Image (cartoon, rainbow, N blue to C red):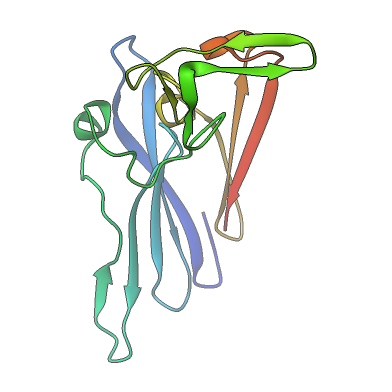
Length: 156
C-alpha cells in the first residue's frame, strides 16, 4: 500500500512451532526512513535512517530472521508486558489478594513471564499512511495475572 511516497509492505517472516504464520511489515516515509516490525512480539527488527549526508544505515540491534528471535535474546525491540522489569518473588498484592506469577528469572518474574508480550503473536492491521496497528488479548490467568487485558500499539 502506498500514498504519496509513504507506504507499508508485508511479507512472510516465518512460522511458529504450532504452524502460525509470522509477518514482517515495512513502513517507509518520503524522507528515506524505513522501519521493520514483526507481529511476533511487536518487535522492531530494523530502523533505517539517512544521516546528514544521505547515507542510510540501520540504527537498532536486531536479527534478520525469525529463528533468532525465537531463541534466547535480550528482548531486542520487543513489546514488553504485562510488566516491564522484575517483580520480586514473582508475586504481588491487589486489594486483599496475593497473586503469584510465573517465575522466569530464578525466583523472580521478568518482563511478563515465559510467554510475555514479547513472545505473543499479535494481530496486525496495516493502514495508510504507513501505520501498523498491533493488538493482543492477554487472557485472565496468563502468566498468573488477574483479569483479561486488551492491548494495542500503533506504529506510525
